[in-house]
Length: 505
Image (cartoon, helix red, strand yellow):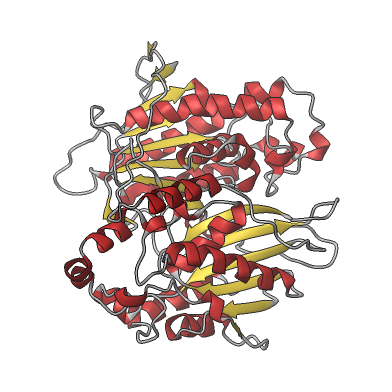
């Protein structure tokens, strides 16, 4: 059920809406090479999708911070770089690296790995600054090998290679050139990188590399296949964070994507995702802190309003979203979520009234019951003492029945959100406000995962995550960022945290 309400005290109108049947998604495989062998290879690749990689066991928790290099001369020219080493940072790229240095200046790192290519090496030098430990070059961190494509302008690649270039655009996982499958090779190389990074005697590691290789590092860490290439965005100097948590029984550590693509600039500026124009967008805003979060130390504390920190967080989120024209805001009926949604709505409606030609704009607000998860967890018999607030991977501790209930309910919410940005709806940008747990599940549905991945993502109070749909709501979503908190300023969550002996992340 949806509840449609004006935030300004007007009468509430309640509409009973019928759930939309599950939306089927058609997968179209475009392939310039038509042999039966390659079709079989495509099927084999699909079967390998989402198979977790076995990593070596670790003795203590480890946090790895990935950074893509700043803008390079070939980025600016629109030239295909691959693993070539002819481009260097532009002035803008150096400025981006300096912004990332400032963003990480108070963070502790034990070691820094870097691609040896000049654009990444220079970015690493700027960010690493006066630290005494030498930067560790790793040739496996170089950018994707693109063979004959390297050095070409994009229109030259299209003109010279025709169908192969088209396949690189629409079916990169099966793209073949000069007898190589570059994306598949990159995924294998990323696994090798992780073996070396995890074997290093350190607790907090900085890795500076490239767009494609960072995508592969994130994807292989959480068990996603090469089909996910261009799905997890990596902008120039974007920061991504992965937590590796040892298991008590030993074996491969639990891995949680704590943050994806926290950029020096606004995560919602620009209209392109993976080089494609996009108009349809879902923005997931986690409600700010409540008093119960502080007093009980538990992520589910009932229907409570925002505390002072939560009010500040909601206002900061509203200010960040000023860069967008939001069509509708959908929130959980939970008090903290409604307060956050109202703050965003007020700023959006006032945005068009700042000039001389004031044209007030109404932003539609709705409340969606399927975004509220308190009832699910109230039915449980969980021991609250076992649940530190929003600790990375905490959803792994939820019993199977609750995870299933969360996943099923979030699936209904996800289908409703897709309807909101459908061609018939007229909406292009929808903001959804809810609890971190429901947003983690929504991201899982966006990536076409299962409930087994719920513990593989993390969100903080007041964070923003952005999902783009360059092919419309029936196409695959592109994750622009996850758990973005830079807009919170002094109230943001640090990229890294203390790793003193005995202290957990």
